[in-house]
Image (cartoon, rainbow, N blue to C red):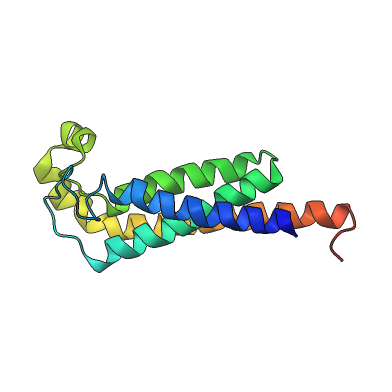
Amino acid sequence: MKKKIKYWLIAFVSSIGLFFIFGIPTAIIPNYWFTRMIPVNYLDWIFLIVSSLLLGVYLALHLYKRKNVKKCNRAVASGGIGSILAFGCPICNQLLVFLFGTTALLNYFEPFQPILGFISIILLSFALYWRWKTWQNLFRQQGLIF
């Protein structure tokens, strides 16, 4: 029982940490170090909160289980990168500006950011579900869950 509480605490702390790690550089959380050229909307907040929660729970479940599942790792990596691109400012991302230019980003990338956000949330949810499912199958094999 103490082990479960420990990993729920890891999930909570890592979710809060990821919220600030993602929110400060993307300037969704106002700060003195970074500025945002495009105003923050409610979808940015939703994508930041949901992706932080999903990544935090996935991290705790990954540490709890310690079994490498490539399908989950690919899904969580692509979902994490997609979520950062979904709520990040397209003009503030120097790599994207260097590759595509500001006009292309504002005309072609910014309208598709919500779609990218929903796809990344789906990928993160899939990775978490698959990790949970393999974790339950492992416990069923050991006879701990009926």
